[in-house]
Image 1 (tube, rainbow, N blue to C red):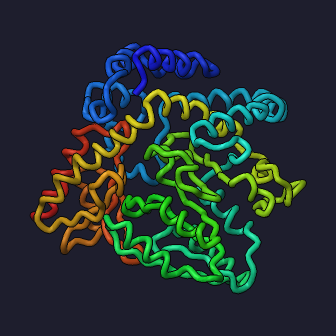
Image 2 (cartoon, rainbow, N blue to C red):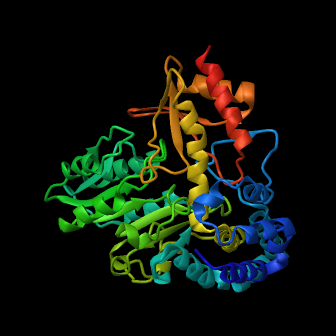
Amino acid sequence: MPSRRSFIQKLGAVVGGTAFGTVSTVLSPQMLKAAERVATWKPQEVASDEAFWYEVRQAFTTSPNLINLNNGGVSPSPRVVQEAVESYNRLSNEAPTYYMWRVLDANREALRMNLARLAGCLPEELAINRNSSESLETIIFGLPLQRGDEVVLTKQDYPNMIQAWKQRVLRDGIVLKWVDLDLPTEDDKYVLEKFEEQFTEKTKLVQITHMINWTGQILPARKIANMAHKRGIEVLVDAAHSFAQINFKIPDLDADYLGTSLHKWLCAPFGSGLLYVRKPLIKKIWPLFGAVEPEGEDIKKFEHLGTRSIAIEQAIGHAINFHDFIGAERKEARLRFLKNYWAEKVAQMPRVKLLTSLKPQYSCALAMFAIEGKEPSEVDQFLFNKYKIHTVAITWENIKGVRVTPHLYTSLADLDRLVTGIEALTKS
């Protein structure tokens, strides 16, 4: 953990190092004082300090009349990020082609460097785009696969990716090999064996969803990647939910390709994401949109999206600042603390089945539960209609339940109401 002096120095950099003065309007004296108070605490100690997280909550503009526990879909941005988008957008509208393309667009390389620091990779390996689907489909449609080549993925993967792979089956005659996981699981050996069963001499790539979006299950991505690489199989990681939720660097996963959305756990503006491609492999991937040198080695060939919102892109930097202010370890610890707070309580209730592991290596903020005799949609509607709690009902393959996803601004009182609502439904 950083010393008190290093923490305060970092805090000063966060406050002073952003345009338009937007951070200083959000980090109140109370919030700065709260941060200083816990500067030398261990992450697990900060995780349960409600006074600190109360101040963090004030940085968001979330509704006081609705408990949003579906942050896994899209997370709200703190006020600092919202104000940055508005400031950049107003500037852009003064003279769009000048301020967007000659002024703000010039800052993309600084943003790329900042994202690379956060991701732990080379700036030359990161492309900035709009979401996980765009990132991952750039690889899915850009890989030079031939008829008969095999790709391994799971039935529990995100639908957009599955649909993209099925399109390649129709277009190019590739073969999909399916892993069907019984979740939750706390057995890495079971997961590895399920993947290995589908590997053959024709397997060219394996897709690994680092954190299953339905249940929050964390898969042993590094172990699967190591197993695949020993067979000469390339690795594509879907990190839509794990990036900036759990504390890791991209090289930790041994991925060849990785895509993520920044508007989820980094709390960046809606419609922001990144693509990672291991540097030696950039040349072989065709860009999703036309580029001057489609077979070139420059990661920027994946950023030829046409006109986009430069305001949204540039405000990503403010989200990184906010993430750094909280601290990746503190953030992960708090999110896991919130999940365990409600999940441990409802797991003891009759008729309730928790569909997510409580062990830290297998879950963080996302969790799912089911109530015997109740359809997921019935549970979801009851919680909203009676308690104004927004969750999401899910029925997908062998997964059936209600997903609950708190975030940094979620209070224990919010989760107490959730527990009360679930208990009431079990008695009906």
